[in-house]
Image (cartoon, rainbow, N blue to C red; front, side):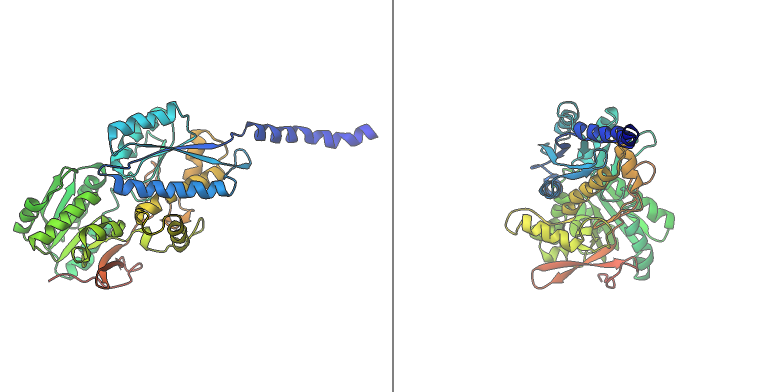
Length: 416
């Protein structure tokens, strides 16, 4: 009888041993590899992303680590980060180092399409899933590459649909008939420019009178602005990185030229940075995307925008030299997706991570909006409204959503 009574207890031993084996096999830390640019043309968008990632890692470790379903426990995270100094050649070397020498468990790209572009083929070659923070180049996402997912902003091929829809609807009703497109020739803004031109031509409501690409290194736009003005467009859409747009807006002020509609990417998405370098007069009345850093979405995972902003301001108080803007959200957003994927993944293989990330599509709603991927890993959720920059006091600037109607907080005002 005693022997029989022991059988149920003995039957539990394999399960207990299995649990012990899982615990024993758990690593002491989850290594997350990433890059940042402390200098060069991409520092302005890279450093806030990295600051967001550091803030997330600090929070996780203060709570005992991130929960990893594969090991049924919380495990501390270690952020292994190297400075690529805005160089794609340096970035390529460092991505390889993270994979082959540091043997990171998870890989995150640096901010933006240029520095992500070299990570995509390297991650694919090593069969390493790439958490693409904000590299939106349309060519990054292909049917033969399951090792990528775009975390924080829509793919460039659909992003400018917000501009074209606004111009074809509200713009046409307000007399906008012609448009000029000026863009920096890189995967991010180049893809947007080509898509925007395609959208406008397909609708056939607005005539494109100027369409010109320039090197991303362009720092003087005086001649380009004169050439645009000669075509007398109603709308001017300038697509570049922050350094491009700062130079463009400064030169535009100097020229004295004005247009009925003016759009820049970073007027809204990195508003504080552009305000500091251009001034309110150079931004007021222009249009931009309304970023998640300035628009409150309903969330079902992670902090609200207000909660995250409070965390950010505590970690990086005013005067610390750290800029608040959309990229501050993007870095944290990528980590939230990673956090949820680790909490639900069946294992720690790179395809387990892929499956967990893709399983979140359409279900995860964070401070960055609705996370949704297509079958190739391109982000098709997290769409940003169109906004117009308005004066706040004598020297301040703000942005209000004006389109689409369900997001609008104000009516768009066009120049004369």
